[in-house]
Length: 114
Image (tube, rainbow, N blue to C red; front, side, top):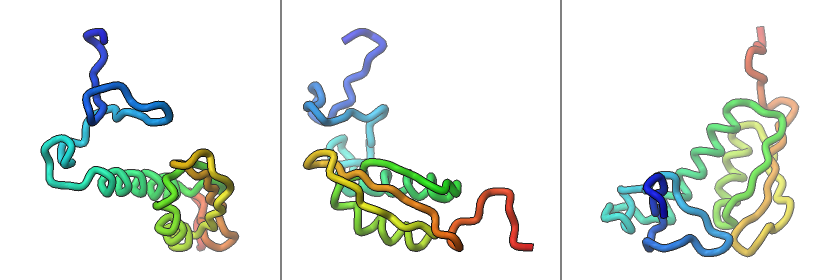
C-alpha cells in the first residue's frame, strides 16, 4: 500500500470480491468504536443518497440496492411521485431497480403550476 492509499475496510484487510470499501470511515459505527450499528447506518446513508437523487426530479433513475432496502425504497418512490420497478437480481447481495416518474408525481425543475 502506498502512502497515498488508506486501508478503509472494517477488518483492516482487503475487501472481499464483490464488496467495496468506504472512501472515508463511518467513525460513529460500532466497527470504528462508535455507537451505531454498521448495517443500519449504511442502509440509512444509501436511502438518503437515493432520496436526494429522486428529489432532483429525473424522469428515470436506475441503481443497484441491497434487497432488504427494497420495501422502504418502494415507499419512498410512492411518496416522491415515482413507481419503482424491481428489475432483476445482480447478485445475491444486490438487486437492480428503476424509478420511473409518474405523469402527475414529479415536477421538473424550473416548471411551475401557475
